[in-house]
Image (cartoon, rainbow, N blue to C red; front, side, top):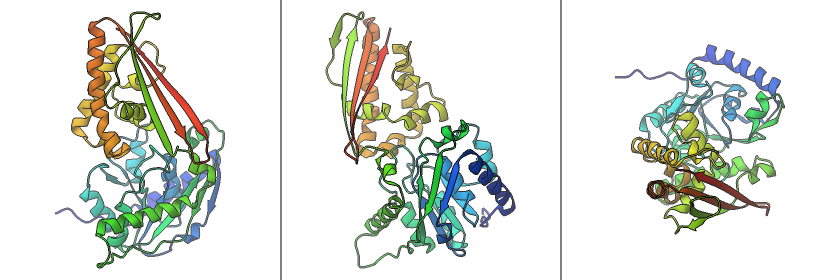
Amino acid sequence: MKEKQKYPRNTIRRTFLNLVAKGIFRLLAKVKIEGIDNIPKTGPVILAGNHVENIEAGFQIAFPKRIVEPIGAGDIPFGMGLDGLIAFYGFIPVDRGTVDRGALREAQSVLEQGAVLGIYPEGGTWRPGKMPAQIGVALLSERGKAPVVPIGYNGFLGSTKAAITFKRPKLTMRVGKPIPPLVIDPDGPPKKEQMQVYADEVMRQVYALLDEDELNVTPDHESYKLHIKRSLDNQDYESLPPLEGADAFVSFINTVIILDTLRDSLSLPTQCFYSGEDGQTLDNLIQGIDATMNYLKEKPNFFTYRMGQQMGGEVPLALNNLRQLAIETKQLNQTLLLDAEIEAKYRNGEVKHILHQFAFRP
């Protein structure tokens, strides 16, 4: 039987690394920490914040006055040479998109031992501020009898690049008041509904700690159009019928964090899904689709977890249809042209029009 891990763990190592991290953050950015004393000094507690870049995880563990046990992505590599450092620090990996009972048991054990757990209820960074809260934060609060401390991270979008290029972004970590642990009402709605209400309230209080412009990072609504043409040369075009699953495909290629996960973190040959790339061929497209579909055999929930059941579920359909179209176009020795249009409407009333163009040659 596996020996139970004791928490908090690696306290000497982590205390040292946290001091180093705080020094680096203050050197590379204009750091402001507000309300840090709202984190209880003793007892189990969950730190829950918004998530737009990986750098928030560094703030979440470095600035609290207690050792924090982070729980994070265990389904993909971190990349950028961070895997070794993160493994040295230690965290609880969770296989996102599945019910990872092992990770939940370990996270619950952290709380049962009176320690601090750090999580991000949105579950990822692909649509900041617009993703529904996962119920894991509620489940852990209820089982671990732990209050949840909401944290709003302001100014973090694009901060990693700004920091490493010495532009010193202004980063604010704003800590709110603890939310009492979830207690399930046996006479109330179904347990899962109560957990979702609690998780949503956690994120509502997180968003209340954000500046107004942080809530305008992701559009409230997007509409999509995909125009498909075949061309013998630059003068002669043939418009093709709509592609089944087209909206899902456009949403996919418009979400950079998903594209980067496939290409950079998973090292798949998916450069073909980035618009404006010169020299792309139909073989490149077919290869990229095949690599993505093969990965889905291993991780079938990759798109549904990130894009929702309906939209994410249609991505494989769109890719298969596009693959067939690419094969037919190659046999005709023609060029396949894709124009993907997005109309994005934001909370502040702003409307943006985005165009992604692709040309795949024989």
